[in-house]
Amino acid sequence: MTTAPTGGTEQHGPSDAELIAAVRNGNTSAYGTLYERHVGAAYNLARQLARSNAEADDLVAEAFAKLLDTLRAGKGPDSAFRAYLLTSLRHVAYDKARREKRIDLNEDMSEVTGALGGALTVPFSDTAVAGLERSMAAQAFARLPERWQMVLWHTEIEQQTPAEIAPLLGLSPNAVSALAYRAREALRQAYLQVHLTETAAERCRATADRLGAWTRDGLSKRERAQVENHLDNCADCRALAAELADINGALRAVVAPLVLGGAALGYLALASSAKAAAATAGAAAATTGVAA
Image 1 (cartoon, one colour):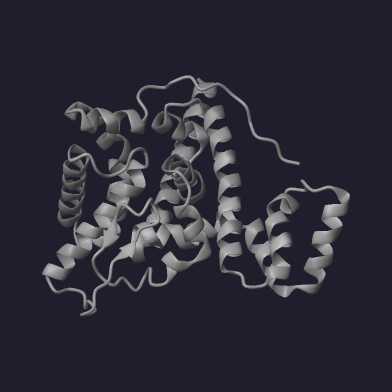
Image 2 (tube, one colour):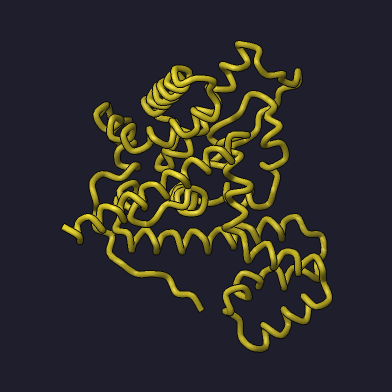
């Protein structure tokens, strides 16, 4: 059975949550630190949505300005700055496109609740995310505390390492790993709860309630036999078990488009290529150092 990593919680500079609180208290220099941490990600998304570098610059600047106003008003994220910023940037891009009549919007525009705490709404019909907000994975993600949403966004969607995430949370890499472990466990439980809410089959409830422990080999021999006997005879629960085993992978397919819209694939590809380039550069530097 997998065990949670352990480690200290020593600080590595102000966390995003601390910086956000400082901005709300009037410390604008704290916003400069948030800008430096997240501007690269903002440009990765802006380049997918803009027609030119100049337009990308404008989108990033407006998104950061709007989010600063939001924080000063006491609203917005408490810790998940990156995902909130990217959602804001996507809204800015679509609002600009609407003004310029570059996209065809439905006359009956509805509000789509974002996955991150429901704090953001999308005042247009975006076919790239149509229906995703109603998926079980998105609903489960939305039920998590913002801090857990944040660590899952950075680990599972942007696929950053604990060392890369540590400064954002003000934790050690080991503590980030432990937090991510707890968040993944909570996500599985939330996913199961959504499934239990939606399933009408009473005979499936006892099994569904145990599937989280079953996937991690945490049941007694007798309970495991009961679950597996049910799975042998229930296609719906077999499908749920398969989904649950890969719930983290599903986040990229479901939650990323909710935040990034139709630019999700391009953004994630840019993020992956940037990480690969950084790793290559790091390896080259290390080789040079050894050679010297």
